[in-house]
Length: 78
Image (cartoon, rainbow, N blue to C red; front, side, top):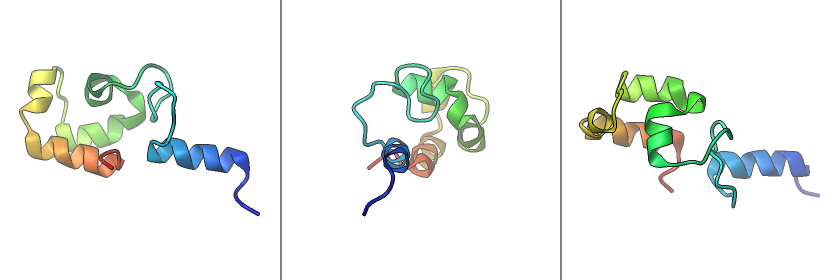
């Protein structure tokens, strides 16, 4: 007997295994790199820790180390 459906869905969403275009972290809007790096409330704490208070895409992309750490912590690089 496997995991209950609700737990399987949650695990799959957290790991990024979904056909939904909605953001894995907030499920409020379409998941795009810009949304995740600049707007998503679901990853705000991780974003602040790795990227500071980047207000623009140019600022976020200017910190390649922070950007890679951010995506790595999310586990969405797989």
